Image (cartoon, rainbow, N blue to C red; front, side):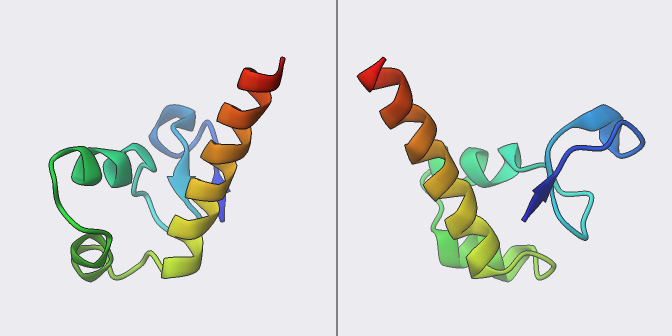
Length: 67
């Protein structure tokens, strides 16, 4: 769902099949914009990709808290 390739934006994690950095999703949410608005704005990203990013982020947080 997310890839990091040195040839695409210098290895910045992007949504697979796009050049859109995953960070953009978090920036939109931090600015108070909705997930629906993000998905409408960036039609190349699907809900399942955004959900995968959230699940991965939560697993990383939970792992750090239990360490």
